[in-house]
Image (cartoon, rainbow over all chains, first blue to last red; front, side, top):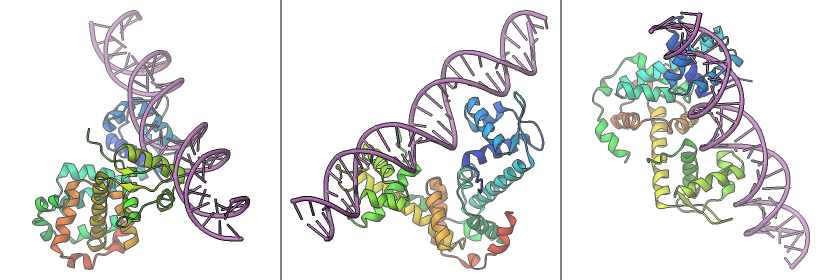
Length: 142
Length: 142
DNA sequence: TAAATATGTTAGGGAGGCCTAACATATTTA
DNA sequence: TAAATATGTTAGGCCTCCCTAACATATTTA
């Protein structure tokens, strides 16, 4: 039993981490707003996070992390950050799109690929990236 | 109405394209095997591909592409290939994992990021990639 | 050609993840 | 403090994508 977190679960953890901003208490309403879903859906999802021992919450109360939950959330966040940075610095993808892509890629990408990104970023060698011809490349996909 | 293909639909198209290998006729059984799903699921999925005008099929007959279907399938394939190549050549990810990642990433990645990969690959400058320290990078994720 | 096997379909179901509507509880404010 | 508003929950439903079991059709082969 590996208890792999679903993409949705990871998104919830990420948003809760962001909203908690250190250790603020996080409300269902805000989670729902951040994820652009109905409050009822957030309530339901949080119930499963509770079942999985990732967060704590009393009826009508705020959501807080368990140790495990916080650990997982930070892992997701780190992965997101690496991808985002890689896309921006190496592939010259603009911030907003890099962020969106990271949001989706973070759920499916292997540790090896992430490691590749990390290693690449550590080189800090972006001369090649400086003059990527994205316009031209975009046309190839038509 | 953009009629965006779902990840599952794209996977079906990709597998059908691969199995058709030019223009061989493709059987439900083979599609199911390739995707590791039940035949019944394949049948059902193919029905929706038919509804979307992507493939043709008669009862108990083989699956063939429509023009639209073939076009879409080749688009997916091209995207897959670009990602796979990028992961292998630039990030030094091994073939099998690169392929798996490509399979998942191809459904979520933006045209901009793909363009970045294409542009990067066109530079053909892999010196930096030659000595990426993946071992070390892997540890960062713990 | 009849039986065995391979292939395809139908029916019914389940889990995940979302929705709306209605209701319950808390908090704010007049 | 009573009413208004904000917040949270419950119930029921929908869609996607998968499953198994049972059945239908085709194809092979003895």
